[in-house]
Length: 604
Ligand code: C2E
Ligand code: CA
Ligand code: CA
Image (tube, rainbow, N blue to C red; front, side, top):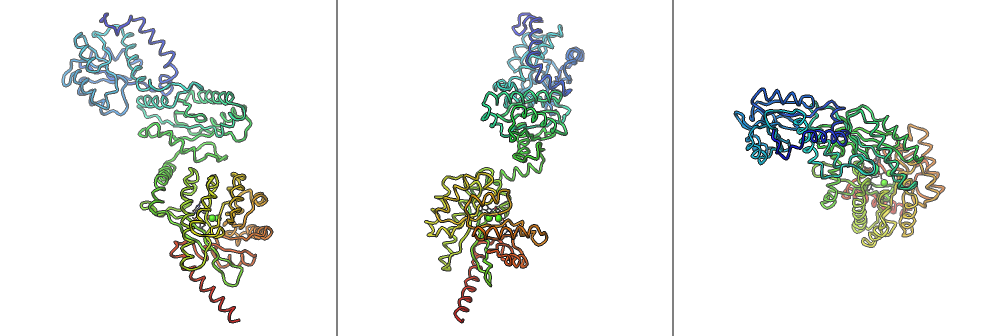
């Protein structure tokens, strides 16, 4: 044993230092994880002499899984071929086939080896210096005395190397004492090395929805209290699950733990505890779970997936836990693609406007009254994408505004183009999303379109879906009042589909009621729907506004609606949405009808 070496503090001190550290820091982290999950670190002992392998093996086996190699070549092959990592290599220098120096040299350039610490075992003082230069982190002197010291050294080297990668990031979140996010990810990466048995693990994201309300109503101090309580609860609830916990964002916690079938109980306990702190019916605990993670998927991505699962139930009060599936994944990827492509699509003209005619049916012959502009996306690779696939997506991230502005511009230009070709104005209604109404410039944007295309405000009609009212009635009323003030006509779309229909009518001045399609679809099979259709038509009469029925597909539906006094019809019975070139035929046909009717009045 080399007493002069600075690496060798007195034995007692080394051992006690090691015990202390083990207790205060590691005792509750990686070690406890390995313990609860029944996993152990692996150490590779490389020595050509069986007696040395046995001696070292004896010292280490109580703490580690020990794997042996008889020479450098065998060691390198082992290390390159095993997926799960080794925590430490104990390396003899003098060996046949490939000696220890060659292994050290090789390790420096190998992805698989370069992060594994190597302790050299030698009796040759000169070799120590050379091996340290070659990248060994420590050495043990042969023959082997004092197993306690050797063990302590191995542990310390492993510990240093495990900490090396994570030392840069703040370890703990000061508020909750849980891991900070970067540290948490690094820790999982380290731990995975020992997950040789590939134990099934779950990545879980817990979110406190509307947590900010607690801060706002009770103050930040109270908010912090609540977060601490939730953190403690989570630690407690997961203490037998080989889990790591992290406070990822204000209202978001991550847990990495042994797989379990259900998380409902955990969400319930957290929810209960929250309710003790606040009575707000809006504050909900929800979980997204990526179960039995694929170890090939990067750690950060595993939690992204858990989040993807969560977003599926965000705001849906009927579900508290959502599991990630490959289907969800495909959908998320698809959505990412659409988001990435939409701006180019507008630029390249892949976004087109289709027009669906609306006919006035009160007279003897149906007459073309106007059109609705409906967006169509012809994606060069994905083919035609239905608005149902991208409108809600773009509403969720605000991109809808770009799309809608473009559609409005196109529609306004189209009204002008038809007028120039046919000498008549076909009014077009455009859809205004509930998100568009938050744009402070919406009114001036629409007004500009009129000036640019020399249109009357009544030529460009505005369809706003009823559900916008439920979301932000005040803003909707303001926008509608301003637009009507400028002479625009407002159609209330999907009327009857929401919960606020009547309430809304009392507060919002509108010009047209557009009945929800569902009533029409069911009115011949279901008496209640039929009576509702009649009711909506009566309401329109009472308010002295006109009423549109959309989704009309058959002659019998048309006749029924006509009989009840409905003013306008839109639907496949006349035509689905078509490109402007095709729509021209409807204008031409209507011009003929107009002429014939004129001719008749003339004859009379
Ligand atoms: P919406 O505004 O209620 O539009 C009517 C939808 O019903 C259109 O679907 C139309 O093609 C379809 N439809 C028309 N007649 C019939 C019929 O007889 N039977 C049936 N079954 N369906 C009929 P589309 O074009 O797929 O649009 C779906 C929804 O996407 C629209 O519902 C609207 O909410 C939204 N949307 C479409 N274009 C735009 C747009 O430019 N901007 C915004 N913000 N939303 C749009
Ligand atoms: Ca519409
Ligand atoms: Ca509609």
